[in-house]
Length: 64
Image (cartoon, rainbow, N blue to C red; front, side, top):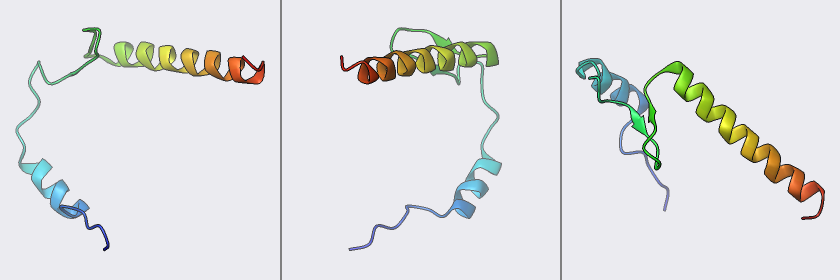
């Protein structure tokens, strides 16, 4: 059986054109309560993830 998407990309774009603009509370909220409500907040979160990945990769390289 082949999986089919629920809607095509064109259908999704058409739905988004009709969507209302985001409100102030339309933001991602992390499990620890931090709000990703600005570019700076997102960039800090991505830097944190990259640091954790680097630490994890260093542990694997060292045979930890």
